[in-house]
Length: 488
Ligand code: NAD
Image 1 (spheres, rainbow, N blue to C red):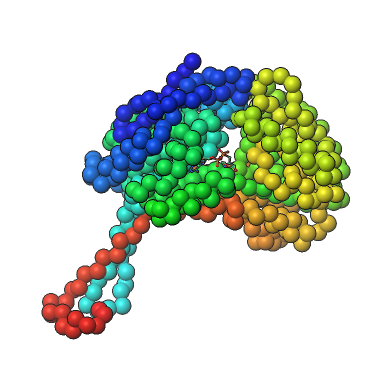
Image 2: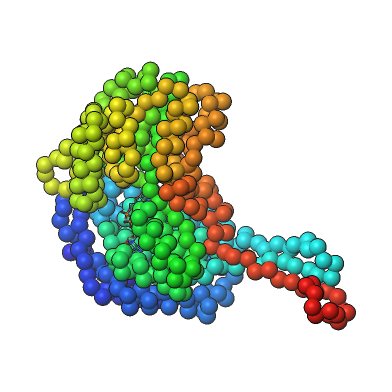
């Protein structure tokens, strides 16, 4: 049985309690995880606060911070096979995806490393002849980063990387569902040589560990990725510390296919959009909106293509489709699928929980064109369920695309250039993928509209988000200040 530890103030330590972590491919406990309770969370925040104000960290130049991040990136690249193995064991996500994704995580740290010494202030051409004014860009303070169980190295990189590049310190909370990859990552932070307290990594349950962390008075910014309900708790909780909050939440993203599209390409992209990562992806293209004239042919080919997906053990490099992360998640999905069928949706493929060990659930397609308000088309399932609806013209496609309170991602497949531009403008979502899906890069901002959250991760603005500006005024006149009762 493997055992993991918390990382607080540069030291590894056991949790106040332990909890089991389950391998979703077998349903068996495979590791003991440390649970951080209030005292340890408070200590982690205090360590980050001390490191921010009075440590070797604040004395480092921005270029030196960048060098530490480059070193961390190299260590991640070297450790990628081990980290991928752990993520696969703990989450059930296939090794084929975790290994390539984690190797790419190193590129995220390199991107932020390069930005660390490019965060310049500015001189303001102030409208007063005897004054000069300039802005100094400063790190915002102690950051609380809270992440969900999926893609934790990736989702934490887009918080830890820019926060450290900006000069902040951080307490990172790994999800209780699968904390192994981040607790292992703590060893790389240690090896890279960050001063004690700059990065602290804890895990535990949301109601205590997450709530104490996000509401702590010393926290200046809460960077959260997870579900909208948790986000609401966090926003209420930050009424105490008035921390800045950035939110990356769920979605119900439309995947829109016009009859003029390259349909073979759209077909494979739709498979990627909803069945990669067994559908457990915030950007999952879970609503197929298809032009009515091509619906039957597209669905027939899609159902055929789905039959050839290789389901198997997540640690096998040949496997394309593994289990869900938790039993709870599988039960929720089954309930929504059953309810949607009762509401009038037609099951095209999948839809039944299989016998056997592990939390497997088959790729599922529901035709909801006769019942566009079915639960499966309105609820974020975070699983491998594609709900299909039709449209007859562009206006209807736009209306249906925008018919949810979410707005994270969208895909549009068309070979009509002017239509692609019109659709891009009309869709209310943070990402529009045209003739592609699920492309990400550290250079391109990522984030949502509406219930999908706010704030952007990736791109230069992501680092600026962890900074604030200080306005400095200098009076250049040698004459004494005259009238004290007028504003200067
Ligand atoms: P979740 O919201 O249940 O948990 C996320 C994290 O919040 C966990 O670490 C949890 O312990 C913590 N938490 C729970 N209650 C808390 C509280 N009261 N205070 C502070 N922290 C608390 O999410 P999940 O089930 O782990 O992940 C699935 C969700 O995450 C889906 O909605 C998915 O779309 C979303 N997600 C979004 C993105 C994105 O970038 N937009 C990426 C991945 C996942």
